[in-house]
Image (cartoon, rainbow over all chains, first blue to last red; front, side, top):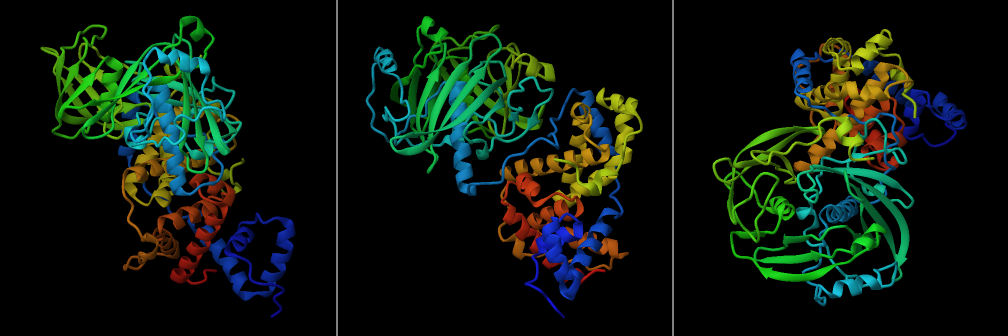
Length: 423
Length: 185
């Protein structure tokens, strides 16, 4: 037996068996296989298995599967199937851990854009500027690639747990084609953090948008440096139905995926309170730029952080958005009960909430959405004779559906999703 | 990216009106499509996800979303091949999401499941069982590469792994199968 070189790998032999080895390789490999009984047997073996599996007896498809599919369609449910020929993400570049961290970092940015919340660190000693200082700070402009490092060592406490960004409701759209007919569902992937890329993400149940459950953001990623570190600059712009876009910019250090700084440009003042521990509530205020400044989409700062003692079992809500945010971070379970102190009257379009609102989980349910069926807690707000029921996803605590006086609907059609929110 | 030649020939819809009906979500068209393609799609999904109930969920989802997805089908080659690729991507995506919600047992690869004790009716069933007994990571790469004809680069993108990892998994799968089946001819 004359074997000209070492045995080819299984990958190469399989390529030979499938007939897709490049010609230049096939010449050498073919010469080897012709003389090597071991390798030729392996090629035949792969061909045999392939042939048998391709003509194998198919499984019997139960008609009940079809019946259920048709019933789901009749109920208005749709599933966003991936485009099989769409370019999928590049092969993995990072480890699983770094992937999780990156995702968490990006997720936190998205959360901030939607909610206008800054995840200030618990452990970093920072000055507490008065509200009136904010304009001054804003005027200095923000960390602009190396200038200001006020929270450069900021950790992201509990970013994953407190993220309001749903893990299952992303939709990526082709770049420069916001009018694409149907977006491919994908998960937000760290490989999306590539310089020069622009993509779109969509979330459900945007607390920031009050009762508008869907919002869409474009994300642009670029490389830059800050204090000698290589960082990603991520610009996330939210599209809303009838207002100017909100822009959130974050700098993420590449080596440890740490959020170094954030710049937010919004158009309304918003106060968000966020539970950071068992007994501490951290209070963060967003600062609104003047109208003429907002018109030019100038950045403003998120500032004015203070810590508020949290009474056991009592939480605070200032407005509907913070109320929905609180729902996101409540430790809901089958028998959970609680009450919310309302600083000022929580008023929806049709209802004024009482100043102390009791809420409880009363069973669970499954809500059909455009991205599939989502297990939810049925959270009841005891608002009087006609209580509200909020269907809160068990996974991400997004409010997917509200029934009662302030009933909420969410987009159920492609036109709702794209035509209304991505103009 | 083009469909693998191995699956191009499967299932071409008969005429544009059939496609138009599918796009409109006609129950009759969906039923016809299901009866023609669901068995092979279910087999494919089962090979990828390993559990029949999960595979049925995948196929069910595909048929719920098919009319809207059909808007992208034009000029995309054979319908059957296109549908298989949709199923592959949806199955892998669905499984990835499901995995994020549950703990996977560790050391699965070392706990190789034996081929069932009862004798298979023919060599086809023997091969099917042997493939079904592969650990999931190896099984998915094997099915995508050997049966569906995806390249390692495509598999790497689909599974979010490195090309080298895909090749190693295939090598391990083939080694296990050779151990179970011997050198098939």
